[in-house]
Image (cartoon, rainbow, N blue to C red; front, side, top):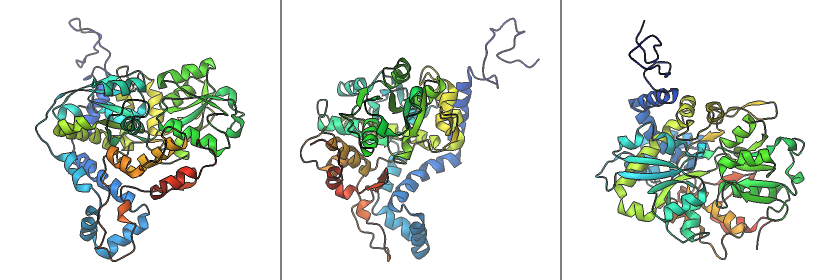
Length: 462
């Protein structure tokens, strides 16, 4: 008989139930080994470099026909040089590839056990941190207030943030003001509105008056998107419904107990509610704003100033993980890697449904939405501006807001500074390279007119 770790007839060895190939202690370790092997191929390394540039160019040319017209008119080399003159491709590529002596090697990084943190989490078992010379401890943390406090107390070197949190902390909203930075967006989309199964007959938000909803934190896309959604239906989120802060791992239990009627929360807890047969998916947040940011990877401005090479190494590790997470063929293996107790502590089938986009919705349907969750890492400053408009809309910040100044201090993406003079054709304003427009519930958000956007809503505070 072939000698394997699970040979039941070997008297000299313990009976170990390992992975299918017999070389790893678990299916999760087997999946991590396979993903590590994929990450070391020349093809993947080229892909991970190229997708940064592709994301930037897509923002400048959101309509692919215009990009193709440009390339045909001036050629790829001229177009590349012109685009590089107005977008920070070179600095990002350099940060993603260059090395340097590390100022600090032993690091603690906090995370909340949700799929939004997939790149930050998977970089640990896949060895992406250690490959950069870093000894990283990823620390599962109970809630967002604790994440904030541990960053303020310097107990964590870097962390998984809700993307509005560094804006709030930098402004001193809800805490002491300490400059924080968003290095990358951890995930786009990846959230949902989940309702209790008892409300299957209340699919119209106009019928939600008196409902109690949970969100993970005040300074979260979840809170802002829920408020936006119900306000568009004519409900005042501060008067017609109740919004409570509940840590994500406690949302399903609160739904089961009847303490809340629903939640706008991160996955995998929306899918877990369906799995437990206590909730159904009312809608995915991608249907409100496709490509919206949710969580981020960030640290303090002080840490970056004192440890620039360490920060660059962290960036490389997390960016490599994001590039791998974006590829659909890796999603099932990633679900195996991040589902165990040390990370998400969730049934693998629940996590796989979220990451692959093939899922039951709790209403008797099986859906196929490949971009239910995505991991585009570019921290566009117009995303930050939109968050600031909602913070002002709902009274979290008062008075005049210098939207762009704050966005550029916190979200680490250089604004465009030169004209595309080399192009003899109509093209998007290069000054908006870091400020692409977005459409939220059918309404175009122009970051150049942020204050007018803030004041345009019928339901708002102040």
